[in-house]
Image (cartoon, rainbow, N blue to C red):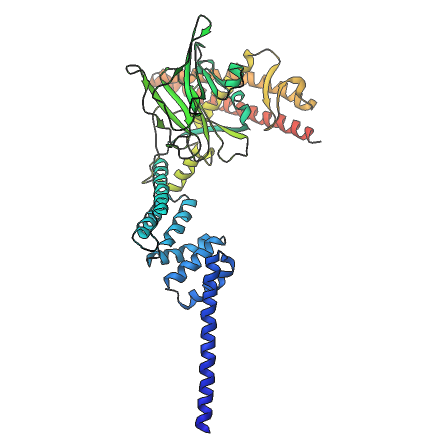
Amino acid sequence: MFIFGRMKRFGFTLSLLLVCLGAAAQTLQQGRNYFAQGDYERAKPIMLKYLKQSPENASRNYWYGVCCIETGEPDIAVPYLEKAAEKKIFKAYRYLGHYYEGREDYQQAISAFESYVEGISQDKELHDPEIESRYTEITDSLKVLFRMIRSTNRVCFIDSITVKKEDVFDSFILGESVGSIINSADFFGDGSEGEVFMPEMENQIIYSRRNNEGLFSLFTRYKSFDQWDDEIPLDGLESDGDIRYPFIMNDGVTIYYASNSSESIGGLDLFVSRFNSQTGRFLKPEQLGMPFNSEANDYLYIIDETNNLGWFVTDRRQPEGYVCIYIFIPNDSYQVYNYENGDTLAIHRAARLLSVAETQTNLNDVREARQRLTILAYDISESKEKGSFRFIIDDVTEYHELSDFKNSNAMQLFSRWEELKSVYKSYAEKLQSQRDAYSQAARKEKEEMTEALLQLEEEVLKMEQQVITMENEIRTLEINYLKR
C-alpha cells in the first residue's frame, strides 16, 4: 500500500507537471498567434515573460522588440532587435533600419537595410526579389540623402515669414534689377497654370507650362517691336518630372528652377543650370543641396545681387496652403560644414533648417543684411503712390491704406513708424558710406575713423531695434482690437 501510495502521488505530480508545461507552451503559442495576427498589445506581455526566462533567445528578442516598436516604444525595442539581428534574425534589421531612418541617423539606417537585403537574399524562406529591390531603392535614396547632409551648404538666414501660397509672389521685397515673377494666369490672362519670370529689361520671359506629355516644362519668348515671338523650349532641361518656378540671374546664363524629377529627394527640389552659348543648350542641372532641398516642396530660389540678399520658398513644416519665405545672405562660393570633425547634430539641424538663429554665426553680417532689406523696403514703398503701402498684420491680414487701420492708436503709431524708418534709412546709408570709406582708408586714417564709426554703428543698431519694436507694437495693438 505504501509503495502504491507513493506511485499514485508521483503519477499525480507528473500529470500536473505535464499540464503546466502544456499550459506554458500553449501560452507562448498564443503569444505567437497574437503576434502573427498583428495584435502586438496582447502579444507583448507574453513575449516579455518568456524573454525573461531565456534572455539570449534570438526569436524571443525579435518578437518582443517588434511588439515594442508596434506599440509606440521604439527606444525600448532597439537593444532587443540588435541582439536578434546579431543572431541572424534578418527581419530585425528592417525594423532597425526604419528606426534609425526616423531619427535621421542615415549611416546606421543604411547599414541596417543593407544587412537586411543581404540576409534575406541568402535565406531560402525569406528570399523575395520584390522586397529586396524595394529596400535596395530605399537604401540608395538614403545614401543620396546622407551625402547631401554631409555636404550641407553653410548659409546665414536673416529672417523668415509664413504666407499663403497664393500670395507668395506679392510677398517679396526685390530690387528692380532682379526682375519679376508672377502666375501665368495673370500674365497671359487665359487661366493657364504655371509661372512667368521676366528680367529687368522686360524683353524676354521664361515660363512653365504643360507639354504634350502633360508635364510642366520651361519655355522662353523674346519681345520684338512690342510683340512676343514664338516660344522656344529650353534645351538641356528635359526631365521625367515637372519643371516650374524659373528664375534667371542677371548674367542671363544661370537659371534656377524647381522640379519633382526622379533626381528629387522628395516633392519639388531646387536645381541650377547654366546656358552654353556654343551648343545652344543648358548644361546638366545640379541639385542645390541642403538646406535648400528637402523631402517637402521647395519652390523658388531668387538672388538679388544688387542688395546681396537671397529669397527661398518652401512648404516644409507648414500647414496646408501655406509656404515659408526665408531670406538669406548669398555666399560668393560654396561653403560646406565639416561633417567629419564638426557637431553632426548641429549640421543635421542646419540641413533641415530647423532654426534661423542657429545659422547666424556672424551677427554683424546679419545686422548689415537686415539694414539693406529695410532700406530696400523703404525705397520700394517710397516709389509707390503716396499713402499706399503694404503692412502685414497676421498670416491672413495685410493693410495697404492708412484708413485700413481699425485702432486709432495703431494708426498714429504707424505714422510715427514711417517717420522713424525714414530717419533710420538715412543713418543706415550714412553708416554704409562710412564703412566703404573705412575699408579703403590707410591704417592711420582707420584709427582716426574707428571711434566715430563704432558710435554710428551703435546708433543705427539702436534705431533698428526701435523700428522692429514699434512695428511689433503696431501689430499687437491692431490684432488685440480686431479680437474684441
